[in-house]
Length: 178
Ligand code: XMP
Ligand code: MG
Image (tube, rainbow, N blue to C red; front, side, top):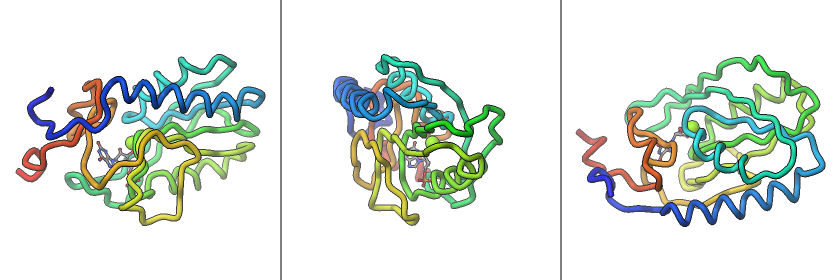
């Protein structure tokens, strides 16, 4: 295990079981629809890549960057979203997110997407941290509900590091308190 990780929250095997379950749920709901996966970069890259390879029906993939400026590990509430060049009008958009925390990022993103007239917009997040929510928002598909700890790995970073860990772990507080 990486020496900066205090505890593994989800192992590779547990993540794999989550992907199996989520892909079945998404397949059941979307196999006869116009599914457009919207990968929120960069944190959701690995989750989206794993999930979409378990979907055995036609799907479209688009990517968007959304970042909430942070000091250290706390979301500031200011969210920057890059404009989409892909057309989502009339499509069933499923936002693929790494973590739903305060809800600032996704509530801003959904507001932006709705202006582009998709047929529907739903959220699929691998992690949900409901204890810190400030916006009235929830995900249709949730991999795992987690406690209020700062986690990294499987795409999630601290200062752009740890994204390549194959598991999701709690970062030692001394790493971000220094
Ligand atoms: P909000 O608060 O807007 O946060 O719902 C969503 C974005 O904040 C990042 N985030 C985290 N990143 N470990 C991380 O590596 C965490 O524990 C964590 N909590 C929030 C993440 O980019 C997410 O998309
Ligand atoms: Mg993110």
